[in-house]
Length: 185
Image (cartoon, rainbow, N blue to C red):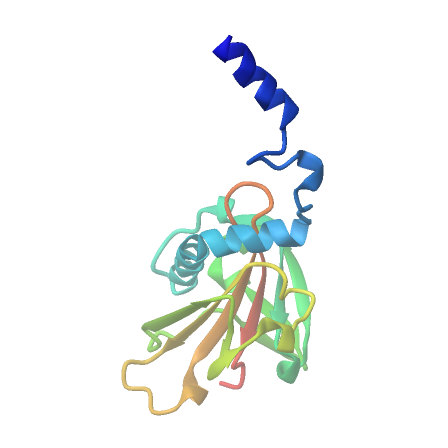
């Protein structure tokens, strides 16, 4: 009798302590991406750090870290140009470059820049900025700002800055874009 009463009580009060599927908030793709980035910023930061090591010539690149195609962007002040590359094309650090204003801007950092700073969800260019201030179309995706500077740097104007933008909707984070800033030197 007690078991039957308990079953009837559960059937009669289905919402007691539980939410129905219809009552749960809907999650958009943007919210899912934001939620995944909020849960694991260190995963994105570690991936960005591995890509920086590759660009510096200190590591091989696991091509699975890249999406099928990756767009490289030059900051608006540097001309705002962009170029899309396949994963295979970016297997060599020298291929990471964008042409702007009759000049080829290589994403490879200078040898003297050895001190790495990373910021999840931020764009770096001397100071921290929201990525939306430079590239609003990329700002909703998880991203990591990186900065390399020499150990004895006296000015932030001599730093190397790239923000790595990821797609995390399917599996591990994969690089879909990179924004090069501090292009002057």
